[in-house]
Length: 204
Image (cartoon, rainbow, N blue to C red; front, side):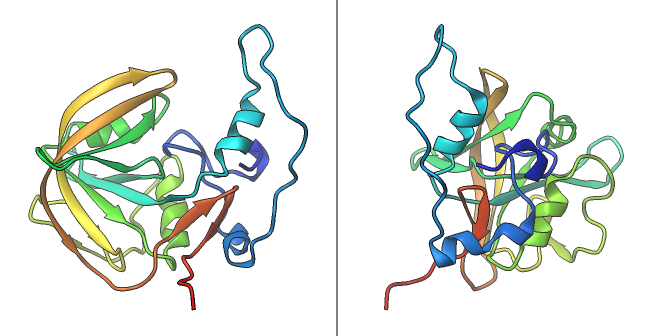
């Protein structure tokens, strides 16, 4: 993944998300330097090397939104650790850093909404990944059945209720039960790989 200087503010993301201008790496297949094999010393891995190696696992990107139960204002964060967990019951999961300032606002809501971001929503991702401020400034959204923001242009949305939280190092793993869901806009997904954004290209 990218170094600290190239990343957006990390606390409100599940993994650090870089600035949108790095998106070309997926489409053109540019390779990152391989470097030398890394071995842990005294059982501890270098955190930078850990990011670089795990950055070779491509992920989608979501925006998790809700309405703050305290002030009634929309709140959200960007995450690329979202995954499906179970069909019966319908469960999903994502990870949040303990240092996140947005998660306390989200977790107090009756329901959360996962917005699956589209390829052209890099700016939305950047806005959701920042710390503090009005993350919804200039964004268009409608309301999900659960009462939360569904961002215009998102590929799909899922209304969820928190089922469990599991401490995991410097993050918490959040398991949520899906209450309602639907597809939304058309288009390709926003993909995160080796510190950059890109899109999915179907084989010809």
